[in-house]
Length: 505
Ligand code: GLN
Image (cartoon, rainbow, N blue to C red; front, top):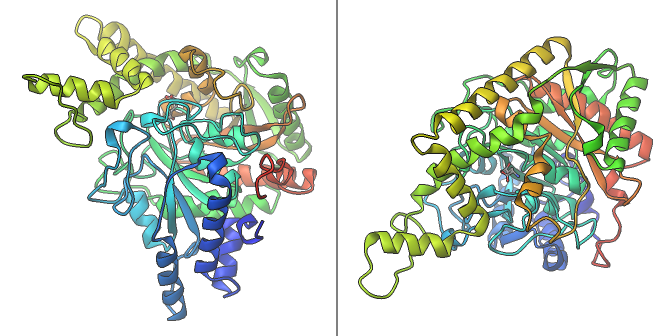
């Protein structure tokens, strides 16, 4: 395997700047890797045929002395929920098969402006509904650690692409955990920004009050570098914050230098039962806490009594918003149109199109959402869920008066087998038990590898949460713990991934 693809984005960018590697070489190395392994992994729905051309353009601009962004020339994988003008955008759905957007999502436009090289669009559960990518209309992605296992979801494609060294950086979206849970099961890093911190313009909407776009990477610093590119106010997104964000890369670099853990108050949740977690997940979490404590962190128990109601509230709020957002797929404006035989009315065409174009999970949630929003039930369901959401926000607010960050395991188990949960939607929903509350409260969260579970040798993630607008705190704490862990392991966790089931690693 070429050494280029094993470099972190930060190291690759430094070599590009120093002229040791060209962007064309870097892009080609990743395209070769995709050609070698993506038949097995299936992280990509579309590979950018023009990637080398884009890279050549960056090389030419650099040679001409242009002052390019820090990540210029580095390849970037893009979750298919984000619209792009030069590649199809399907959000994992048949209803958008082949759809070409007339505009770029703001995060894509900013990435291009920073000189990143879009290398392809990554697989995902249909409309970002799921925790395994098995709900993709284009077939599942496989976990590079074990091809029989799920890569997480909904952004399993982005996480697998990064874990399999098919791309150094990826963009994801997180409505209830779709950046963090895939990071947990693939041994990678994923960060959901503060709600409003990154533009949602051009991110195909799932649940607008919960969706956030964020980075998927192999290191905390790489996440920060990509976050610096995509953060900031966007007048095209009415919920976009007008904050001036600090440099996240500077925060990550400060964290990696050490000292940050000394005196850091890390909250653990009193109400989070050990019993819900696979033994190796709970053990990896405890070991990470002990390492932080040894570096001077203070572990403090905090109470968040409503945390456990997050999943229930989420599965009323999300379907309600999703059913409304997905109403736009009406066979008139976008994508698929199915016309039944005979004297079909407009309604017949819509019904036939939506029946053929949407998968089971999407239909399930549209039915749930329209029911929860129906008159007579609205207050009992949607109204109550919104009240629970407020209580969860208040819990976080008081917890963060006592601690700097909250830590939890990112998800209850390591990567489960493909097919294991697909017929049990409620079981699938519980994968996001610890990630959903951050979306409901709008606070930022990061998942980074904490180790391997003893019983199956698969990766485990630790999640840090911080108060809204304190994303930089996650980069300081995350980079500090990452430095301690990598030192402890004697190298990055991904170095310990087994050969990609015999493929060309
Ligand atoms: N797995 C969760 C769901 O199915 C989260 C999805 C997401 O974050 N997009 O809704």
